[in-house]
Image (cartoon, rainbow, N blue to C red):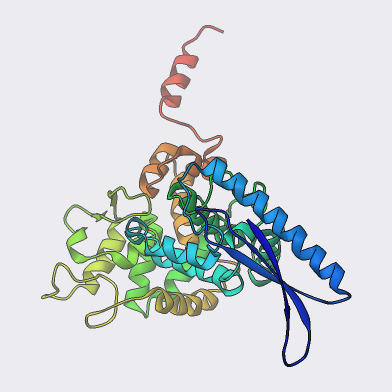
Length: 361
């Protein structure tokens, strides 16, 4: 049912029309149309909106089959996001803090936008703003994909009708994956600059020597380090699969230098001071000073992980072995290092050469 009510301000005498639409089981929704040019135009606009809204709600009622929230008309992007962040299963995700950070950006401009009005033009406008604020397509895509995940959650939980699909082709084209690796000279210079700081020196050695991720490095505890076996075990990883990797002897020595005689096994390996774990912000600040002193341009902490793969590939490791060290779940992730192994002999080449030498010419 749609109704149009004419109102006149007692103070100014200005005329406006309030259009209200009610279709059970949805809550009533209304919109005010102020007279800008003439009364007839304003009334016509109010009637057109009410008719369109009523048709839309009847269609939603028919398609939803009572599986969609009754307050869909009033559901805003802000309420959708907050409901998603309050979900118990979402809170269990180890990336929850990052999810909260990404979705908070959407709340700034869209907290009161109705879900039914969160359409392609609105989302594309938001993406354009992201392009201006964020430096890379990959960063923009992270914000967009997180909002998409929230939207899909809304559909799966009955907050959003199934026919309100997330728009396609909103992701930006990303450049090919980074291939910035240390060469032998750069590595020697970097380690020399890091040497005065035992914590950073050990962290860099371990990162290059094992390909450990930054988060895994900062979560590492002494109980995870096997000095005699020369290996570390990461219980919490990006892929949710614990893995154990070999630690080069030089990195083991650096770790021994960090450990005190009475350090608790549950204590973190990398600390800023006694009992205080090293945080990402502190690690990055110290890293930038060492990196700049070493004269490394366009080089990030994560590139130490890439460098581990590069050094292994150039010294005969197979892609399968590299993927195992880095903890890749998919061979596709390891293929970025394929160019480093191309043309290298593999197991069996020596025997094949011997066989060829004995083959009649």
